Image (tube, rainbow, N blue to C red; front, side, top):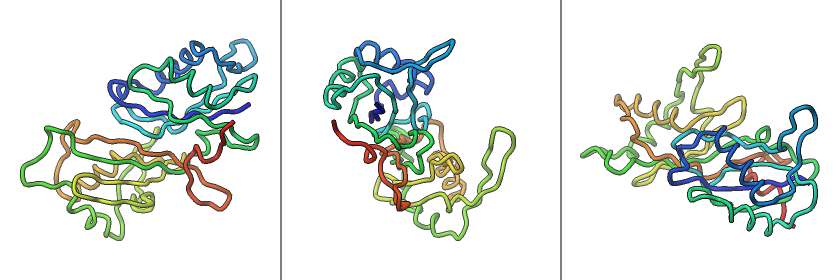
Amino acid sequence: MKYRIKFSKYSSMVFIGHLDMMRYFQKAIRRAGLPIAYSTGFSPHQILSFAAPLGVGLFSNGEYADLEFTTEVKTAECKKRLQSVMVEGVDILSVKVLPKDAGNAMASVAAASYTVKIRKGHEREGFSFTKDFDRFMSQNEILIEKETKKSSKVLNLKEFIFDYKADADSIYLLVDASSSGNIKPGLVMEAYYQFLQMEPEAFEFVITREETYTRDHNGQLISLDAVGEDL
């Protein structure tokens, strides 16, 4: 049976990288005594995958992992047992059973939403980092150079920002997080500060991933946990 876990990441755990988070969950699943399924072959491993790896230093209220169990476990019981072995900085928010035809979490990701704020102690006197964001987004094009593993390419960043909102002290971004787009909020902020003819300071921003999305059969964005159901 396929299950999808939604969890948050905060406190000192934001400094744990993706590979270490995978190892952490592998051990937590064993400690929780859950009937995790293993792959076959010479070196069996837990059938466990994560959606849209989170950058180091980012907070999140919408992280996801898919896993398979060899026997049925009630979703409430699974959530309780996993939460009991979590350290401070990771909370299990929900557990859903996936339909048999559900796509893999990582391959299904279409978008992600983020909140960007100025880190306490990094405020600049007389400067509001949100007040010109509407003007920044009103441009016909926002051309940037994005580095890839083998080269770099110029793209129109505006095409990959699906929605945004700037209020008094934060900027909300809904951006393409698919394998073909995969826009990071830091890239948006770099382009915004370049527009302002400013340089962002190191560790200036507090960035929180609020949710991770896939698309339904009609092409509409839905949260990844909207795919499954309680058991």
